[in-house]
Image (cartoon, rainbow, N blue to C red; front, side):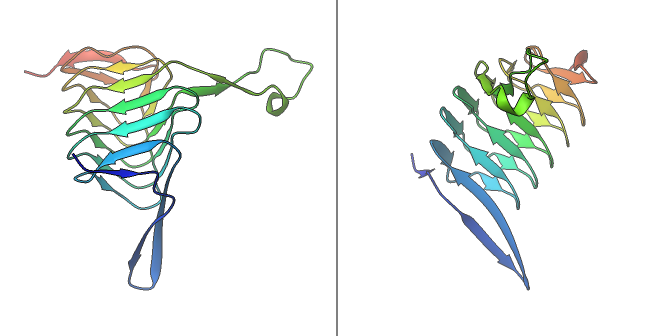
Length: 162
């Protein structure tokens, strides 16, 4: 199996414009996966793995923090989706949030054959089951069962695929 490993910069030139995506630090992407313009995928202190035949559309951000993001095969990720295993510390009101550091969350697993709608947010510790669909703009804070359709803020299962 061939993977693109630790690619620092991927540059596409279309006409007179540059469309850049940045892929860095502990990232493995299967060579059949298509990555749109202006995507950032960063393993940070953990790692990101993307399976076969996935599509990651424009303006997505995928960050592992100190954990892992695992995206299975045949996953469709809409434009503007955020997937992050880390969050800011903010408990001390007498200290600026930027000075409180980052806390690592739990792994994020997207099992495969999924569709994640535009501008959805996948939060730390979430497992999205095989075949599940996440609606546009949803904020996923809890596990989504296989073949479920989840929408809203926070995301709730509204029905199952037949």
